[in-house]
Structures are given as structure tokens and as C-alpha cells.
Length: 142
Image (cartoon, rainbow, N blue to C red; front, side, top):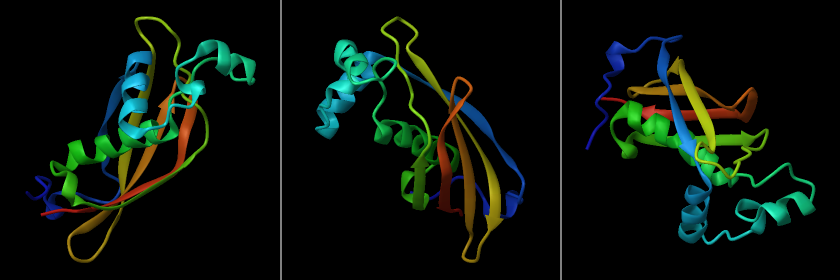
């Protein structure tokens, strides 16, 4: 597989179409099973509040994965992402209702590198809170 986005068709400053990812408690339970991270702050409301959190929170790596998903969906090939990193800046609080929380991810082409690679700067928010900072991906385009 190769990226469906062409290097010659992107420009520095180009914005990637934003995407919203819904996260519900069920998603957190499934992620806990897949990742092996069964920390109670991610599924037990009583425990989360007992340790001072406002409610159950999404796994940081789950949040990061949504930003990664955004990049791979844009590129058209998961193998096109050659470098990816973030810092966690806030929590995604996930209420126990039918809506859950929304992680909104957007991106911009920050730099064009040699060998048809681009640097994508990412922004991820939940509500008004920026939940990832220094989020960047290097993507190999075709």
C-alpha cells in the first residue's frame, strides 16, 4: 500500500479536513481489554471521583490513537506514517450517557521535507480543552 495523497498536491499551510471521534464508556472497556490497561479511572466512575477526577477519563493512548487514525485516514495508508508523537495536555472526560465525549482532531501541513515526506501538525480537543500538545506526524506521500 502507498499513500493516496500526492506530495505535489499538498502545500505548507494546507488544512486537513477536521474529524470528530466519539468515545463512550464501552469504547474504553474494549480498549482496556485490547491494551491491558485496566486502571479503574478508565471505567469505574466511583473510583475516578474518589481519586479526584471529575469522572471516568479516556486512556491517553486511546486519545493519541484517534489522532493517529486521523492522519492515516487522510494519508490513505497506515504504513505511510513514519513518525508520530504527542504530549498529553488534558483529559478526555467520558460521561456515562449515550453521547459520551467527542475528540475533535484537525491538522495542517507544517513542512514539506525531502523524499516526499510532510510534517503534519495536529490539534485534538475535547470540548474546549486541548487534549494533545506538540502533536506531530511525519507522513510519506506518493
